[in-house]
Image 1 (cartoon, rainbow, N blue to C red):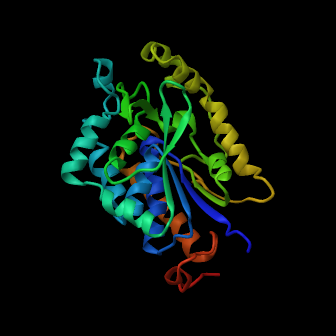
Image 2 (cartoon, rainbow, N blue to C red; image 1 turned 90 degrees about the vertical axis):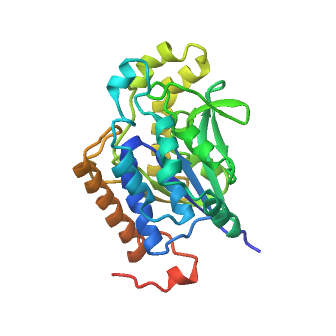
Length: 299
């Protein structure tokens, strides 16, 4: 009997740019579009996926527009005086009290359907990516670790006795990892335009000052543009046995640290429109569920 072809969904991070992916995923939820066997989330992309898998519609939109825009979270002045530029400690604390993730639903919904959710983090000691399969007790810790961008967030997150940081350092778009795990239909939700190529940035220049104890992590940060651009090359020229759907915005008003409501709402609406087009018009993979399969298809 021929083995069933695996289908993967990968969601890129990008700080506040993640609101585009939040829109795409909310549209998928509205249309009950879910043909995927595996889910890979990186940084903000992992957080977006977790709410999506928990069935918490528009939770991520509310987080971006009600909490992450606040100066308690993004504050360069705080950074200059020794604090975090992006204060994950504050954000995770307030999320627990005002908009908690339903970790039980996220984990059980994946398990019931015999699917797999992998959160990407980076080992501070080796600089290599780790792909963690969360349970109810550790999902929030994994998501915080995957979002802990070195320099902008000054602390290390400890997971199972290991110091880890943002997954986007070790594997910003884990499309090759999905392929290694048997995925032959792969959808990638980007938070950059398809033509974007990565270059060395502020973290590369500042990492020697902030990460003296972690030389392998410094090297991984320097190597990150190579990793990123290698993944984009895979998307544009996949192996012959792979079908790729590259979901990338035509334009973006939001940057990684944007706090403008106008920009955030514009990019959320772009994501919603693209997600609806994919799930309703046949521009995505064929849905596996009966409910999704009964939906009308626009020509």
